[in-house]
Image (cartoon, rainbow, N blue to C red; front, top):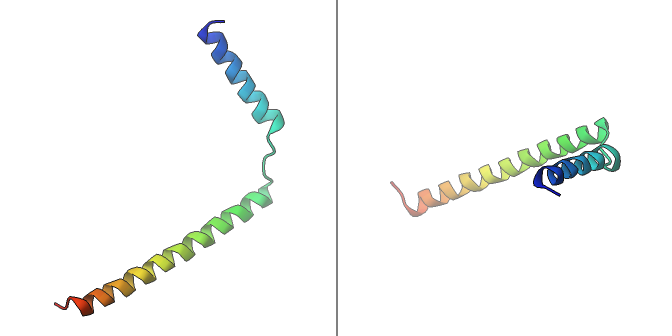
Length: 65
């Protein structure tokens, strides 16, 4: 079997798996996941901001000027 036939068979196998065997999330599941990612990102950003602010103030005391 030449390389083009192998590639065509690979593409066909991928399509069949994606079209018939994969369970795709519903719109509500997708929205819920997106909300969770958004909230987690905001929380992590706030934690990093608080740490940066705290260390900046500590370094200002340690190294004044």
